Length: 166
Image 1 (cartoon, rainbow, N blue to C red):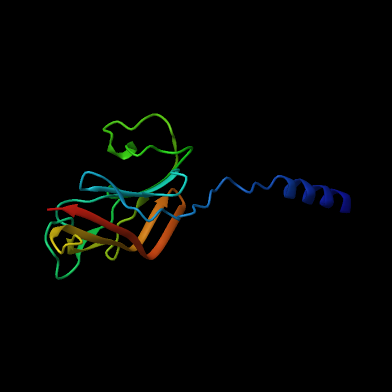
Image 2 (cartoon, rainbow, N blue to C red):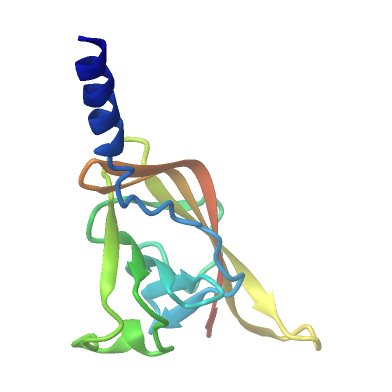
């Protein structure tokens, strides 16, 4: 009986699968890149991971804000993607994304009453103190991303600063 239990234990332990869950690094370059005014993204240093925001004119305005503007997070305005290679600088700007690199993991934003994108806008001046545009400070509050049963949670995530001209 001991031999059978020992063999059964060895078979069960040997058959355990550690799975292929890839832990995202979630460490991005400082620069917020854009495709037009409303598609913003940050990539990691290898350009193989991207956090993407799709905003609209209600939160990206060319006017200083006295109170931060909010846009509630949804699957259509927040995505985190892992690719099998480096993406080009125009990847998100194309109507039809290229075939390669392939998206290997895609997490989408989860809506909730307290899950929102906050944008604070201030005037932007050049070195001669001439008003040349606006800086938009973007923070994600109670950010939740899901990919099937996997999820990523951040109470507060500083997305970065995006600048628009006059």
